[in-house]
Image (cartoon, rainbow, N blue to C red; front, side, top):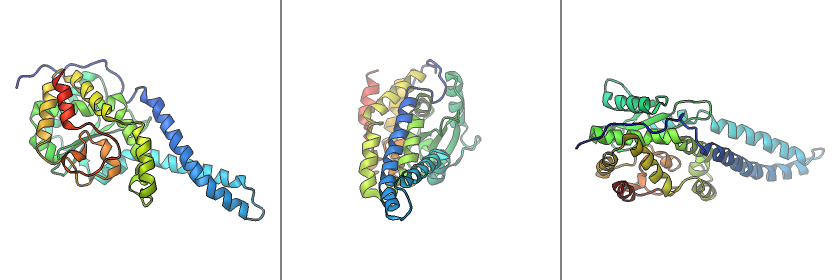
Length: 280
């Protein structure tokens, strides 16, 4: 398979994009919902206690909301990596992967992300980014993916992962996981999942995957590479065993492609993504 040279497109710092404003709005909306959910019962309790003013419940609700939001927004990537069972990539064992990431980041003029590998036969990759004070993100890849893709295919997938870091998509997705995972996977699932699905539906859609694919091939200038990668991925499982419902939107390929169950957000199918790339 012939291949054109890798060329960068309009270098920009990782995660600096118009999504920053929507991220703030998202945090504000989640904070308001949580505050209201806490304020109502705490205010009622406060009015029932002799000598305690009702507005004390509002203050307590505000403090609890602030603590919860702060804790959920910090060290999100670390918690996700632990849940995935991810380990740092060994540069000797996975030299091809490391070299491709280094070359694409250098060409695009962005910081190199930290690289992690998950011991799983599934074929998938994820992009993570941890808050406004972190300049570089993280890319997580499964052993199963690295074992089956050709170099040109891996380059297409790496460019996809980098494009999600570069555009701010990875930051938004990681933030959504940090704030909404308890509602999706926690004990209040019957109530939490519909609310989380509605909230995340405002942030993510099928267009997210299609836009990311186009940004990726603008980096490599070789759409057939990513199409071939999707075709290879499609031949095996893409649902990592450690993947929970709350983190499925983090993966480049939807775990539902090969029987991975439900999704909280709408994702474009691999067939649709390959068809769109074939028209470029």
